[in-house]
Amino acid sequence: MSEKKLASDNITANTYRQGHIDVLDGIRAVTVLIIVWFHFWQQSWIMPIYKNINLDWIPRNGAILVDMMILLSGFCLFLPYAKEMVYGTKTVPAKDFYIKRIARIFPSYYLCIAICLFCFALPLKEYSGSEFMIKDLLARIFFFSNFSLDTLFGTKLNGALWTVCVEVQFYILFPFIARFFQKKPIVTYTIMVLISIASCGIININSININTWLYAHNSFTYSCVFANGMLGAWIYIAIAKYLKQNKLLDITSAVLAVTGLYLYKLMCHSRMQSDDIYKWQIDNRFALSLVYLLIVFSILMGQRIFNPLLGNKAMRFFAGISYNLYIWHQYISVKLKEFRIPYWEGTVAPNQLNDQPWMWKYLIICIAVSLLVAVFMTYCVEKPAAKFILDKVKK
Image (cartoon, rainbow, N blue to C red; front, side, top):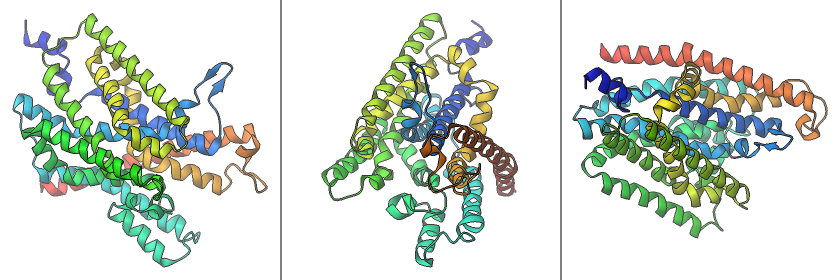
């Protein structure tokens, strides 16, 4: 069999030879879009219910897809290290890893903070005093806002940014964790999972005396999610080179993907029936991440059938703007409502009065403004700034 034929049949050809997996763009895009849907649903109250079709459980549980974002981060970041384990290819030094992460994350993140502070929080006098303003600002600047309840939920600098803080905390340690994982994968994975289980256990023991809102967003509890992403990347690279695309693999992948989605739906309904959704997240974080891994893994195994749906130009576009769409959409929706756009009178918000025309106008404006801001920030800030930083470093 020729090398060309082998490359077209092997499911890792796209991974190993091109260094990119198109369907992961689609998974990331869908994940962020559902999170966006969740936050818009919170503000608009538009229920996705038509006759006997009720999809309300999808946006209602959009918050737990943050775990999918973190799992994808662990998976994608560890892919080069997994290739080194399996193929012997060299990964980039830790210094280059940090520079690339800084170039990718920091410009949009810090500009978002600056805009929220100088264009809204200060002019609108949203802070009651300078003490909390300084605390809030420092927590955002140095990426530890998820460790304090007031900076997590009481922030005036865009509540959605806490997720970036969790990601950056993992980025700081990642090159070291990755090297340990390469040498002792099972030991490293076990330690990361135990850290998560132990932290969740401590939270549960003290759940009566502490606020689960805060501790559900504690980075230690996400350790198992990141670990499952890394484990998934290693297993994928290790076994995929031996598999060829065929009908049996396509059918198996489709069945596993449907199974994973069904399990996800069951977990969503379980969460909705819980008295404390944040405690539910703590209790089920590991199991949920395994369900996410099953979905991701089955789609990767069946790239041939899933690529038209998840690897197309539209999905690549949304994946490309997903970072800025994520960090801006919730803040935009809240501010539009606060500024009464579209206009409404009285003291009760129109969505609470079931004013359908207003609700739909508001939703459309939220979508339009969020997309415009995300596109502008991606192509006029994120990409040029990243290129500038990387070019400066090369010089």
